[in-house]
Length: 130
Image (cartoon, rainbow, N blue to C red; front, side, top):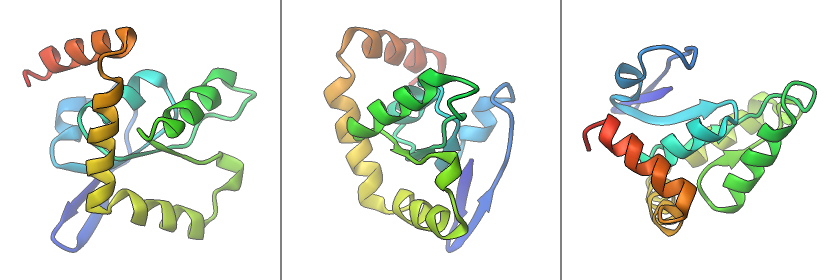
């Protein structure tokens, strides 16, 4: 989870099973592993995210999910073996652009009413009391 206080940026690493409410609070971006639920949750909340799916040997579908979500403009995606300090820095700079968050919110609205997305969004909104 990436948080920003003025010009300072802090990164908090955590497992998905942590207290998600506390982690999301104040989060301006996230780096996720490519799980479909997490990517939809981030998109629903307008949190720009970079998906780094588990390698194909671990879960073949996560790469597919992440690439599909990237095509929809809901996340950015990079393959773990392709990450360098420079590519990670570049991806984080894009995630933190104000217009990137606006694009995610706009793109999410296009897909929100798809049946599976609508169900996930309504559960998430109820869960977070939005």
